[in-house]
Length: 298
Image (cartoon, rainbow, N blue to C red; front, side):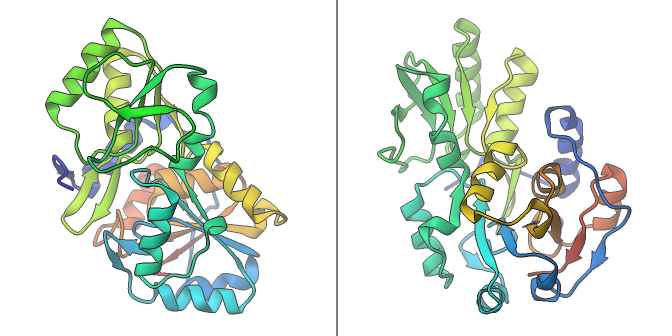
């Protein structure tokens, strides 16, 4: 996959701040508590909801210590859910990737924004065709709708799954199509950026907000920080009260803001994702988004 361009952590942070009015609201603790990792705070919660990129892996590489941490949490009897905004491949492919990286997650333990979006497509477009902005090799048999790669033809809704093939020309064609006919836009990955070996790639959420800014049509977002993703994750967990669940992630505006907005505790991982090598405390102060805990890695 070749992404058009990357952003710096500062540019990504500022863009998230510019968009705050479109995100959920939440309350935060006065300050964070540092911890060595999740095992250290495991007695305070019954379940961990884990972001993927920047927490478990960076690109196709498992983060050092992550597999060992998962094994220890399982031995302690903690429930685990992976809640990922990665939407460019179905659950079976995601599971294969986690297993290849050495994680033993089951299908019931993985909630993707792709699946959350899939459950709502019929409400947005009851009948008709969806045009997908997706990776070139993405297939759509797992989606309960008529979804095809968008090639500029007439569609009844747009589904943004991946930014891997987005170019300036494609964005201009999307704008023209939306000006010609107001069409629902479903965004199955609300992230503005994602950490990769080459930097922070611009993700579907970044381009969806550009369309909203210019055309005045707000897309429907599925995934963190929005409540629809957490509803599904909490449903999978079954019993724990929100305050006995910890959302673990690498971003303030998706993982931490989203987790706090639904009443969960939050853990910010500093060293491998959006804020790797950055002034994390400065970003926390500027945004007012304060995680309950901070750790270098899980």
